[in-house]
Length: 200
Image 1 (cartoon, one colour):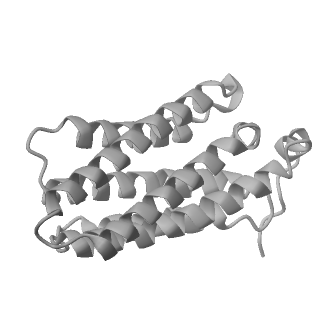
Image 2: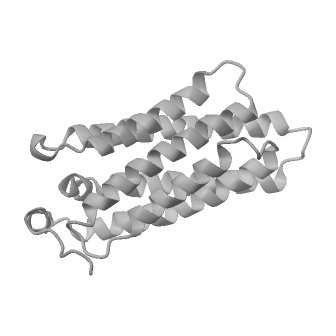
């Protein structure tokens, strides 16, 4: 698992970059969109940007997982990619998508991705001492999804604000982890063979 992540550190950087782009769009629309005149345009923009980024990111994540060795098959990474792809495809193809449905799709995706990220983080800590960035991303995704799942935030501006802050947090953790893994790309064989000492 750790070898797949190190070899594909650019994938985490891509995910962080996409999250940063989405955060910028969400904050921009939340600040400048008139509540009534351009509400439909803003909603459509959020749906299209999230859907396209999620589909492409999901495909890249699944391809990275499929390149893993059979000895340590990264099924958690594959599940993460499949969930991301499914969420993106759902918001793009669901007929009559409403704001509440969009919130539910994103919330379910965040919960599932949060669980898989925590699972990957647990394995990663066996090889990289004091690695906490992916665990932080997983906890953030899980809490964000559980907060939005009941559909309490039904107003577009409030939803954009929540999405912006979550995407910004996800971007920071993913980019931080990506560049840490990049610095280890020439030592992944040592990390695979020598797990980090358990925390006391």
